[in-house]
Image (cartoon, rainbow over all chains, first blue to last red; front, side):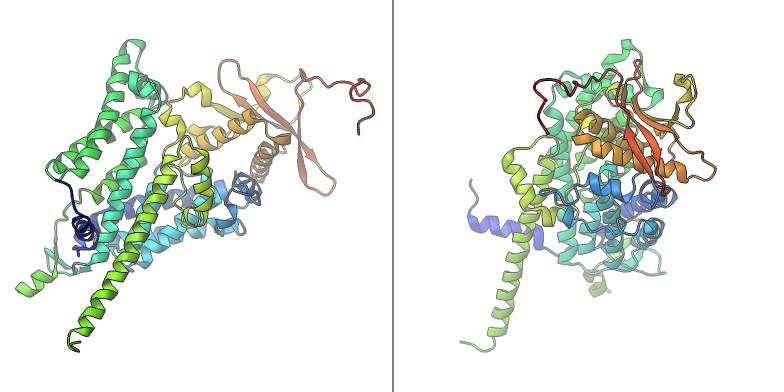
Length: 300
Length: 209
């Protein structure tokens, strides 16, 4: 049975414009805040060594690499203050740390994720080629958290914190969810464009450059092949389960398999943590406390 | 028209208008995200035009970052990527390979191993691309020389080199550090000994500016 335009409009409105409780996005906010905290602590320690006044990549080299004043590169849209004032690197990192901590605690409403997003952007615009693989996903999720960070009012009463259901919470959560789906879809599509992800060789090659303790001898090539097939199958399963309300719960298991495989192949803990955090947009976890909605208030 | 219904209708119309605007913004945004990620490894000329057209939003709002590094997707072999920077502090009379000291070794860069790998990867790509007069590579190496010489207790450098770490240790690029009279420093590319230059007396070059 085909859907009528009215049904499509109604479904669209239901998906995007139904008020949702803050708990839907609060776990995503806490997880992203923690990752950003670790990220900015790292940048606070070594950021100026990289992009500081006399860092490995000074402003002059940085401007060349972004194609400064070269037509078509879009360099004029980059707005990092770190080009003109590289001595502010540590300060930007410190502001990022404060913003991340406030985001985790749910303080500062939209302002704290906005500050984190701006600080992330300053580093990205300054040295896009040095951005790590988890950073694009982290920046995107913080942009969505600016729409609504799932702010709650903490109370001392155990088991409760309050928060009204809002359309903005749903908008932020759905955008994060769609972004994560698109990320996995294009990760899968990019991999399938190479024959090595079909014949099982990719896993073996990545194992050779991954963690040293996992570099196996020639007789263990089947391990690489298994991992290759698991990476592909788990990504396909994540996409399928995210869009299927009946099998949705199984998506967590597929995601667990994917993260484990990527950890074995790449040994990148931050990327693994980022994937786990981003998946909270699709499979939010409940906190030890529960969120008090308008209905709870009315019931009392 | 019933005056009691009018405000409700107006509010409904207003809400519908907002929903339309937000819906269009969502669709445009998701299209931009798909455009960025679909051009991660390969892109068509249409996608190129679309990227340039949407640059104010994609770059300005920081959605332009590519998703996965191509060396992950294509699972490039480690030996194809492994390069290192070597430096020579004072020129010995009989230069030996061990006089060159390695710097920016990824494993030693605490909290920045992946960034170090990426920077070295960019440099090896610049060396392979042989851009005009190696401007990009020289700017990067110059930035590195300034950084290394700014470290307290460091001694002035004489030469810097980008080299593969495979069994052949191929030198990708080498530059000498020149000290200028005003205290600045410059980098002069060292021409490889095997590179030959045609004499200016060649008939086809004679008479050309």
